[in-house]
Image 1 (tube, helix red, strand yellow):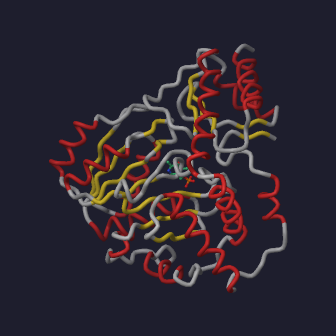
Image 2: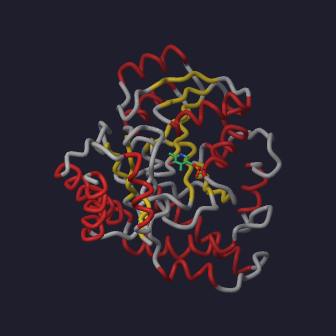
Image 3: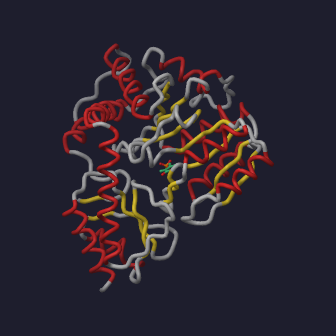
Length: 345
Ligand SMILES: *Cc1c(COP(=O)(O)O)cnc(C)c1O
């Protein structure tokens, strides 16, 4: 099987970690593993003085937890809705009855930052919610410009970096990000099942709201002081995070981001060759989103027959190929040729 979705192809020895007997987690060994995970993750995102909370859920669980614990404790939210993931922030705020305003961004477009500056200045929210990479289109937003606007108006910045962590340069302290979220099957390229919330030193001083027993920030932070989660963790995934991050730190985050960027650029050359349009104004490294000319209704099924997965979408003839997993230029040649063959069927 070859997968260009989330996760992408995972190293055999990292997969094998989950194929062995599972050690008990209320132990010194597991506490040390989790503390080491936290240190490596904070270093990787540029927030050495912060803390990480580990939840056994997908990324949306962490988004939900952030709205309940942080947004509702802090005040009115201002949301960038640039696709289905931005829209998820809107739905979560609606669901919880959190005060919010929405700034819509057309599919695959970048934000009009001058307009955004004026809108935030008029709205004067307390919290800014956005994605770094809107994975539904492949569009990357400019966190430097967003951060500057937030600082100008004293707005706390919360960023969903689920599909940009380890795929783009992120300096959480430098960008004054208070809360960042990721999950295991995206940048970490591990099995789905765990979500991570990064809190800056400043965000740690928040008087968090208590609205959800399982996802309670104070309880989770308190437990992480001894390297534990309040409830049964997905032990093997946290062991896989440990191995993955050890390798990432040894390789260097910059090099990792550069390697992903090169894979993306290589595949985009193929897209140019076959004239598949890439709509993203500023394409992110993690995926390439592109339009096929024909047979979009057949592509997903036909590729599956060859044991290849890419990601379809609700948009006609629009597909996404992830660059996070193991893949080399030869693999991408084969993938592009397979897509071309099906397009020409
Ligand atoms: C994948 C993803 C999520 C979370 O989706 P889940 O279905 O909960 O895994 C949130 N935001 C972005 C930008 C994503 O790419």
